[in-house]
Each structure stands twice: as C-alpha cells, then as structure tokens.
Amino acid sequence: MSEYDVVVVAGGGPAGLQFARELGRRTDHSVVVLEANERLADNDKSTGGTFEQVVDGFDVADDVVMGASEDVVFEGPTASVRLPISNSVLDFSAFLEFLGEDAEADGVGVHTGTRVTGPLLDDGRVVGVRTRDDETYRADLVVDGTGPDGTLTSALGMWNRDAAQRGIGKEFEVEGRYEEDAMLFAFDHDVAPGGYAWVFPAGDGVFKAGVCWVDDFHARRRTDHTIDDYVRDWLDADPRWTVESIRAGHAGEVRSDNSVNQRAADGLLAVGDSVSSINPLFGEGIRPAMESARMAADTAIEALLAGDTSRRRLAAYERRWNREKGSKWKTQRVVGELLYDFDAGQQDAFVERTGRLSDAAADRLQRYDLSVRDLLSLYPYRRRDLRKVPTLLRHAW
Image (cartoon, rainbow, N blue to C red):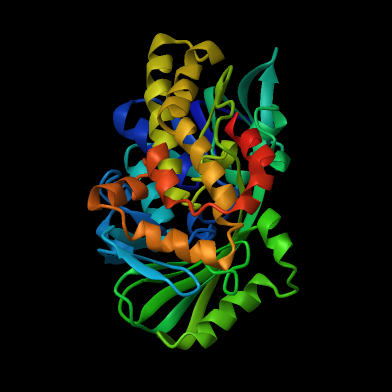
C-alpha cells in the first residue's frame, strides 16, 4: 500500500507536531504525521518543565499547564540562590494531545500506531518513508521528528547518534506537599552524580521530582545505585516535601552534541532531537524542539511554493539554526562539559555566582543567550581543569 501527501512528518513529539501545526495553519498543503505510539499521549519522556517562550510564543492552551511560578532556585551542596525566571510545568501527555488536535483542526492528518522505519529513496533523494507494516508514504517533503532515535537522519548518515553524549533521566510525579513556590535545580553529586536533580511545582498537592545525568560524568562517580534509587532517596531525605503517593513515573534518554549537524537533505528536513537540538547546558528539550520546527517550517513553506525541495534550497534552515542557535549551543556544550564534572566546591561557587547575575543577565540565562563573558563570570576555575582542555577544544571546533 502506498499513500501520497505533500508533506510527511515522521514522529509526533513536540518538534514534529509543531512543524505540522505551522504548515496546517499557514498553508493548504496535505500534511500527515506518523506516530509510532498508539496515542500521542503515550509519549511520557519529558518532565514538561519549560518557560514563557513556549507557553506564550506557541499559543499553548492553559489547560495543559499544571503549574507556574515566578522564580527558579539553583542549589549546590550547601549554596542556594533564587533567580527571577518565570516558568511553567506542562502535563506533557496532554500537551502532545493538544498539539495534535490543534494540527488536526487545520487539516493535518495524525496517524498513530504507525512506526516509520526508514526513508524511501529515488536516486539518492528522499521521496517518502517506509513503515513497520510495509506501507510506504510518498511526499514532496519528508520531515524527521523521531527524536533521539534519529530514524531517518541516522539511516541517511546525517547524524551519528552513537557519537553524541548519552544522558538518562527519571522523574516521579508525586502527590504530597512541596514548600517551595519555585522550580528547583540541584547541582550536587550526592543527589545526582554527574548531572542535576529537580523539583517542579505542578499544581495543588502535586510536584515532579527527578534526576538526570550524563553517562560520561556519572561513570566517574563510581556508584552502583540506580537512577531510581537516587530519586527515591532524595524524596525520602529532604524535609521540604512530603510524599503521600507516587502517581506516575517518567523516564527518557537524550543524545546531545553541539547541534551543529546536517539538518537538510534532498527532500528532507530534520527537526528537534533527530539532529540533537536539546540545549546541552541544562538539557531543556521542548523549547528548542519547537523553535527548530518553526524555523524549518519557514523554509519548507518557501521551498514548496518554489517547487524546489532540494538540499540546496532547504539548507537555508540549517544555516539559520547554526547562526541563531548552533554557535551558542557549541559554547554551552563546553560549559556543560565543565559543570557536570565540578567538585562540590565548584558546584557551590557556580550557584553563588548565578545569584550575582543582574535581572537582565538572568533573563539571558533562561534564554540561553549568555555571552562568553557572562559564562566566564560563572565559571569557578580550578587548576585541575587544565586536563580537560583537549576535550573542550574538540567540542568547540
């Protein structure tokens, strides 16, 4: 069986669905989204923590926002600071359903239970996709939004997921009491060895608590405890919250590099984490995924209007991403390489220095728009860090 649409989007996560929303809202093209899960809501791999640029900038419905606060708290082993950064916590499953329904309202087809397994090629050009059920979907333009699996980008040699840093995260959605009226991020190897931990307020009597780490840095901590052990131990040990029940658990994997990857091929655009768009410093995925989708949609609309979906035409998106995000992500990848390997004293010093940021600099921090000078002001240098220079240079170039 073969179907034809002008645009086929592989993957119904934030990036793929936002791309479909953009084209559904702004064009009359036939667009279909192919999602592997039986329901969009079955994707529960994100904490849902995000900032105003997503909720306001992408017209997210209020009823998928579980909670919001005006501040973010950064903690080290002994230090703590509060920053004036507005934030929101989404019900991630409901968020995906909202994106899908909104796209469908503009004529987009959303097919769940349809796993894309590879690209359909004609003389080296992507002309569609194949699915697990041996169906083919042909299109003028294919979009890879399959997340860190990179189903199409990996097959085409556009992105090597195995060369990217791997990280894992585990979160529990908890019914109970949480005393802070702010998002909390903890940089403390006793809580999250080789990463960070978080607690997000998520509405009356509900909060989300989790731990993530980067495998490279976690391995240096030589612990046999599982990530579940660390989340549960933190929930049990900290008096600022009480746990009545754990009503859900979420787990996920990320693959992160500096995001300066090939994002376009003949007949194909790649969005979100199919080419590693996640911020490499703090690991936020939703916002950069949706921003990449909007950038890609801008290019796609012009390319389809011109009847030219060659790489030469589509690479305008790739250049724009690298210009607006890639150079910053590259610098922040270097900072992340240092941050998650800090000793306890450096973790405290980093936290204390973020507390000295002006309100304007704090805003730049949450926008991932800090200058090199800003970043250097946050960095608590130690002589032993000199051994990291070869690795840092490899990430920087």
